[in-house]
Length: 328
Image (cartoon, rainbow, N blue to C red):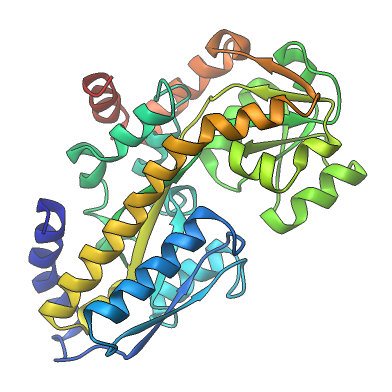
């Protein structure tokens, strides 16, 4: 059992005090929600977690996975976690950062040099420490991180410079760090749920999208693009969550089993993306779509403006930058 899982077990006493104690057993069947479609790496990790939990508990405990927003969007699922109506979720840190702003520091532009560096940052004690306040602030227990690939830009219109994105409706995940980034760039960031993105790009409801390589390739967003910009400008973490109300009702043994196995399987997504992200980008490039590779200079003053804004919004930014520097 790793040190973070041990700290979760120590925190259980606090949760018991808040909720009036723990029962000897937990619910036989857990419900776990995600926004990602069935073929997605996060969904596969959730299914693998459920299968191993069933195996390790000799069939006493099961997990039913609900992908593709079957239980609502992430904001709705987070509310369900807070009330105990939903047991577990694999959720973007983006949504959690709307309620715990310190986590917004993960989205500092170019915090990670590449996909492997992003994974190393998420495995630091500094990153894990940011989960400690979630039971009190958000009503959830965070057991560990996974991630998706670094962020890229897909545009219906030609893009040569960042000025070409100014005023463009650009689909984003609805959370403040990325909203602030594209506002600083002069684009018109447009929050939109994942299932609506393909049609919105196809029919011109949005001009561009912010997306990771896996979905650009697997969901064929490049089919409606003039230009794909490989910018790698932000990492995109995921966190495995358990409802704090559900957590306090578990026995110590069940908490240990769930926390250890969930942490294992969310972490497995990091290795998956490190292994596959470059190949997905290469496949997109080989489709013949106009494909450009850019660095931090492409975004001009937007990065320094974001840094100035988030140095005030997140007390964790300096510590996370230090952790990133140590893991280069």
